[in-house]
Length: 423
Image 1 (cartoon, rainbow, N blue to C red):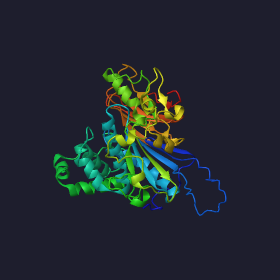
Image 2: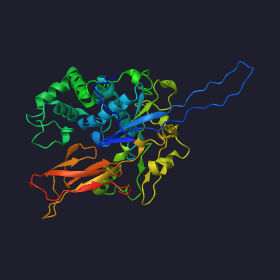
Image 3: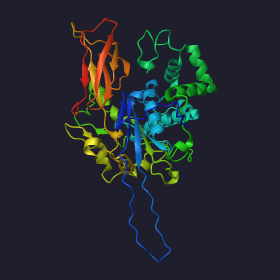
C-alpha cells in the first residue's frame, strides 16, 4: 500500500518532471468513448469495452544500474520518490513494468537482462526479497550481483559519518565522506547466510523506496495472478530502442569508439512503468508480452511486419529517434501503448571533459559536483580520461559547482552546459 503521509505532498507538476536519472509524466487524457448504437428487437448485444490506455508513465535510466547488471544503485531513490508522487496523484491506478536493453549483443542475452532489471524494480516496490535472492543466487551472463551488490548495500545503509550529510549515490561520494568498505569477514557473513541477505535486501529496499511506499499485488496490472509475473513485469530486450545509432556512431572498431557507442546507447537501457485507469486489470493468459524469464519468441510474434527494419535499420550519418521518427519500436503492442508518451523521449548524453589548464592533461579521479536542473546536486568521479557522462533532456542546464582533485585544489573556470536538440 501507499501511505499518503509518506509521499511528497505535491504531485509532479505539468506534463514532465525529471531528475538526473529518470522522468515521470502524465499522459494526455483519452477522448471519451462514444459508441454508436441503434435500436433492435433482438435480445442480442455487443460488449463495449474501453481500450487499455496508460494515463501516466515513469522511467529510470541506465545510470541507476551497474553496467550490464540488474542491481539497483542507491541513487535510484530520487526516481522512486517521483514514482511515489505520481502514484499518489493517481490513486488506485495499477502499473506494469517494462525493462529495455540496448541493441548490442545477442537478442536472448538482452531479453534476459532487461527482464531481470524489470524484476529488480518490481521486487523493490513490492518488497519481494525472494526475487532479489534469486537474482543474487542465479547469475545470468555478466549480471552477477556477488560481493559488489553486497558491498553497495552495506555502504549505502551505513550511518553517515559525523557532521557529514548522507549522499544520494554512495558510489559517487568523495573519499572524505565514503564509509569504509565492508571487511572480508563481514562479506563472508552475508555470503553464507541467506537470512542475513534477506534482511539486507529489505533494509535497502526500504531506503530506496521509502519505508511507507510499498506496493501490493493489487497495485499491479495483472494483480500478481501469475507466479512468473506475467502482466506485472516483463523484459523487452533490445526490441524497442529509443534511438538507433547511425552507421558512423555504431562503429566499435577500437576501444575508444566502442566506449562512445556504449555511452550513446545509454538511453536505450531503461526501465519504464505505465500507470492505467483505476480499476484496470488484465488476464495474464491474454497479456501479449511473455514473462520476464521467457525467451524472445513471444516478443517477435508481436513485431510489426517491418519490425526488423524498425529496430535495426541505420542511416549513414544520423541516428533515428523514436520521438522524432516514430519507427524504431519493433513490437506493435508496446508501440501502441506508449505512442506519444513523454517518458519515451530519448534523453541525450552530455560528456564533460576536465583538463589541467597548464599542461592540458586530463584531470583524473577528481570529485566533480554537478547541480541538476531540479536543484539537486550530485558528485561524480572523473575517469582515466578526465571525463564524466550525464544524461538529460533537451533544454536542461547542468552547472559544475565544485571540483576537488588529487592533483589540484581549485579549478578557475566553472561552466554551464545546456542540452540542445542537436547535442
